[in-house]
Length: 129
Image (cartoon, rainbow, N blue to C red; front, side):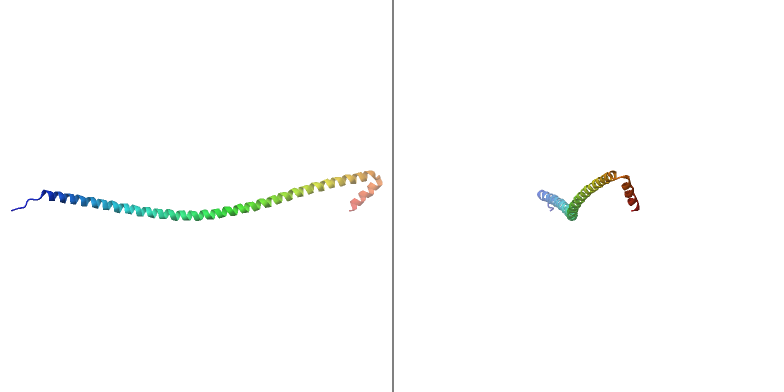
């Protein structure tokens, strides 16, 4: 006698085969996602390394900026000193010019008050010098 196949058993084997196929798909998806996670980790590591490098560059740039600001302050102070010195020298030059003009006026007044002989002697003395 031949045994007839059990319809319940065929359904169970179909369900088992379907479940096995779904399990394989899920495993494939998990493997794919794990690959993506590893790729993301690699990208994050690269970005963190780049970030660390940029932070180092930023620190160097900040130090350079601080040095430049300190140098600028020193140069401004020196400029102020020089401007003060120039102003003082201009004042002294003006005073010297005023003194010279006053001395020339006094000399002219003295020469005018002297006679022509004294003027001639004065001119002879200045010509010899």
